Image 1 (tube, rainbow, N blue to C red):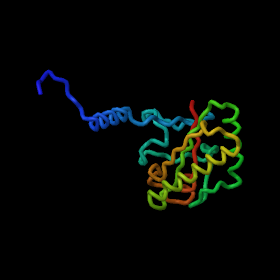
Image 2 (image 1 turned 120 degrees about the vertical axis):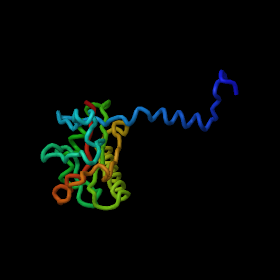
Image 3 (image 1 turned 135 degrees about the vertical axis):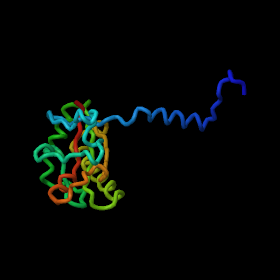
Image 4 (image 1 turned 45 degrees about the horizontal axis):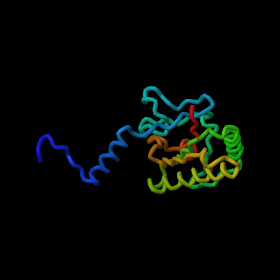
Amino acid sequence: MKPDSPILLSPLLLVAVLLLAGCAGGPQPLIERWQGRNDVAPADGGRPLALRQASSVQLPAPGISDEDVFFALGEARIDSEEQPKLAAHAARLKADPKLCVTLVGHTDDLGSPAYNLAIAQQRVDAVFDALRSLGVGRNQLRRYPVGSEKAPAGCRQETCRSKLRRVEFQYPR
């Protein structure tokens, strides 16, 4: 091959290059929560709580996560006391059909990573199905289970772990 000639790429190499180029920008950050609550810390480069490293995650203080739907240990069933939260989210979403929300499923660190990811997915699906049954459009809902990989390392008491077993609602600014 001459030094001036164009480099010919095989189709497989071309696909690999394109895939890697698409990943170069990194993940798009999830959006911060609504109602003036801000889980984005400037020191973390503006990344939301769900995307920070597990070592830097701080548990939400009591009262900050009022709109999250919480679950019992090992459960993906929505308790009756969580229903008003779902109704409030459904009302907000139905009032603005262009509004979307990301449902972020969290869990504690008990169990294997595969189990925790599966239970987080089941919880996200339960909230998704509940919102759909309340009349929210499918195109308004995004699902994002994170399992236990984002659980803080120092959370060893049940009161702390119970705050981790939740589905978080992340709305655009």
